[in-house]
Length: 429
Ligand code: SF4
Image (cartoon, rainbow, N blue to C red; front, side, top):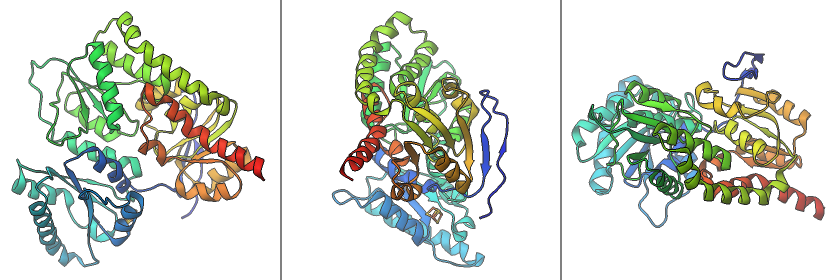
């Protein structure tokens, strides 16, 4: 692929001017989202409509469930001409019928589109609508695209949640104000936040996606929603179209991010400052102590973040503000200004911000800067490691429970571990 020109453009949310890059990029496709979504929603099945390549990616990335029935699979579409598309609908119907007859535990079937040309010809949304009329209300069928042409890996979850929001019931006009937390969180993190919201006195709180697909919160003008992940642009847009009101804050990473995130929810529900401080003080204290343990390892180290998960601005803010690291460049596949403005407000303007990717140029910039730690995708990490550089896989921040007070130390440790390993290797050499 030809490298594109890299032109600085004005960033409206901060005085920082990001590099906008439109060259070759190295990021997983949106199918990867199935790995964490199928674990989160315990009665859903994700049926990828794709090629053998898609099946191999999923098998190697997600592994095989040995002790439980799988909750994802791939319907392999072989090459065929347009005249064969009608047969594909029949084949898919038969596959779905066989699957649902064998698996009464499946309450939500999600068809996931991919990028082979045979699948692009196929109208998956229409297929989902048709199957939904057959199986609803006992089972829901919906679809989203995880195609590598359209999506980077966290956009898979965004597309899924946008589709799910379309199925949420409308709240009653006189419904009490409710809080909707949007974005997959590990169950342990969700439980912690649920307890804090309850202690604060916010009564009506729901998480999307929920663990059971039947738990669909009502949404409408009385809904206040708070993103738990920065990559949910489509889902936020669809929620706003349903009348819900978005509140924004730094994302709940580290003590500072978690406090700011909880505070914006507390303010939206008129929780008194004294009560907020009393409820959050023990968690804040534990988080600060846990981070301090790793701060010595991270302080003053120079970090370069390649664009991958869209969590990079939040990770950079945590690294800089709470772990004392110096950020050289923070890359993100997309810069959603409204969602990331609170993060950039806490970062110095001097750091380089890049949107999109032009991978060769970015590698050159990274090598010239010679950072102590590189946060990047798996494909880039191995060559960097072979050169003796310390790296951290971005995907680990999506798979690991890192949000909230109790996980703040684990988050710091994820960054500190490669530096510790590299230091140990240097001593042995
Ligand atoms: S969706 Fe496209 S990029 Fe993703 S595994 Fe399938 S063929 Fe590859």
